[in-house]
Image 1: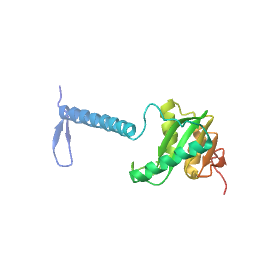
Image 2 (image 1 turned 90 degrees about the vertical axis):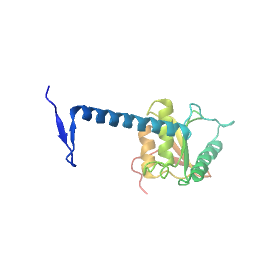
Image 3 (image 1 turned 45 degrees about the vertical axis):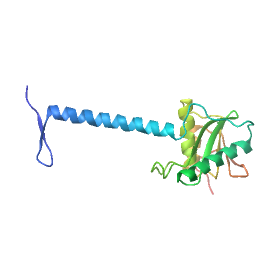
Image 4 (image 1 turned 135 degrees about the vertical axis):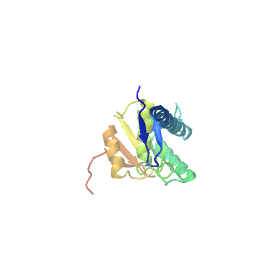
Length: 170
């Protein structure tokens, strides 16, 4: 059997056996990182059940979106919160995660859509309503569109933003 070796930048020689070991460590590290991400997601509010309000209404759902907004503030993130509701039941919720996760797409609406999709194990959120503490930005509106969300409601007055559009003109 021929011994295969690799020369690194530092002129070190790594034989095939060591290379396999290094690859294994790399794979283990990757899967450990993935598991940590899942644990962090679970620790930050993704439980099997979402606490439901006693009375389902646009007002109680907007209050929950503002509860998520307050959680964002408490955790040191941007002051935004959102929930996804289907058939008068909250199926996803989140606060802004832009700063917490160092993710420019971690807007509360996007995170709530992701949470709902994970909980339902489906990317199809047809017949759902997105409630958010402020008017969804174009990225969040496009995400709601692609998820099949039917309607968006935002702000303290529960303003109806209509159905999500890909390119809404100002």
